[in-house]
Image 1 (cartoon, one colour):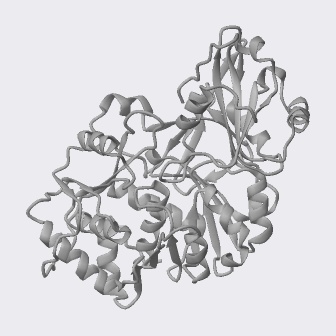
Image 2 (image 1 turned 90 degrees about the vertical axis):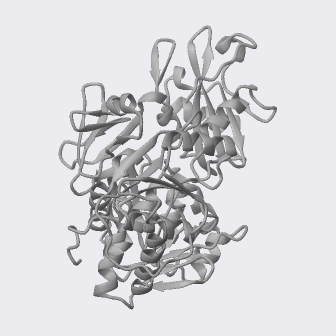
Length: 485
C-alpha cells in the first residue's frame, strides 16, 4: 500500500489517488452514477468551493441530504475544507433531530448538495467527524473523532483484514454508522472502490450481492438471515465482516457452513474509532466461534483488564472526547485509557479477548450477580434462535430477576428451555419467563432496540410466553418494573 499517512483524512486520500491513479473506480452510487478518482476529486473540490464561505477550519457541519451518495459526497466536501462532518440518521424523528442539533450547534445545516463551483486547490488540514452513539433513551452522545484518529483506524482495519486496492466494498451500513465509516475510509485509504447499495424494498441486499456488488461487505448480524436463505448471492464475495452486536451461535454456524470466503468479527465502540479487536477467519474455522470471543487486539491497539474486570483500551484511534460534554468525557477517558464498560478476560498466552458481560447490564438477584450476556449466549445455542435479550425485572423479593426474549425459536418448548437452564445456569439466573418473538424491534443501524423490548416486558408475559419460574414468588403479583438499559 502506498504510504499516504502524511495526508490525513478522506479528502486528502481522494486527492492523492486522483493524482496517482486517476482512472481507478472510486464510487458507484445507488442510482447508477459512477466516479473514478479524478472525477470524484473534481466533484468534491467543487462542492467544497461552494461551501467555502460557510465552513471554516474546524467548523461543524450537520449533513442530512436525502440520498445515500449525497451524504457521503457532502462529508468529503466538508473534510476538503478542514471542517468536521456530522451525518445525521435520516430516520430520526423531528424531536430527536432537534436534540442532536442542540448538542452539535453546527455552523451549517446541509440538507442538499450545493451547486458545484469550479473547485481546485488541495484539501485543507484539520477536519474530523462526529458520530452519535446509539442510545435506548435520551439523547445519544456526540463522539468527536479527529482525522488522525480516523487515519489510524483505517490503517489498522486494512492491516487486520488484509484489505486490498482491488477490493470493492458493498456499503450496506449507513454512513452515520461507525463500522460503515471505518470500511469506507479503508477503501479511500487504499484507492479502492465503494459501491453504495440501493435500498429498494424487501430483498435489496440479496439483489445487490447477486448483481456482483463487491468483493467484501460489513453487516450487522440481523442482515445475515436473508442472505443465508439465498446463499448463492454470496458467491462473488471474498470477505464478510459482522459487527455491532453479538451473533447467535446458530446464525454463525449457518454462515460458516455456506460461505467459503473469509469471515471476520469486528469488536469495538464508536469512542474507539471504532476498532478494538478482530476475530479472524482462521479462528472462526478452527471452532473459536463462540459469540463471547472478540478476537485479538487490532494493530496499534493495547488492551488491559482492570481490577474490576473492565476492559480498557489505548490506541491512536480513540475519540478526542464527547462534543460539549467534558464531564462525560472525563468519566470514560482516564489517563489515556478508554473505559469500554465491557467486562472481559484476556487469555495470558494468546491474548484472545473474551467478553464476560456488559458492566452496566450486570445486576444482582438475591444478592448474586447475573450477567445477561451469559444467559443470552446460552439461549443462542437453541434451535431457531437468531438473537436474544435478557433484561432485569424489579422484584421486591429478590431485588431483580431476569426475563428473556428471543428472536426466532418458535418451535421450542418449555421442556427445551428448562433442560438447557438446568444444565448451564444456577437457578438464580433462570429467566422468570421467555418471550418468543418472530422479530425484534431495531434501530436504523440494525442494532436491537433494547429500550423497546424493555417497554414490552413492562406488560408482563404474553399468553404465548413460557413461564419458567413462579411469577408471584419471583416478583410479588403485579409489581413490575424493568430497569433502564
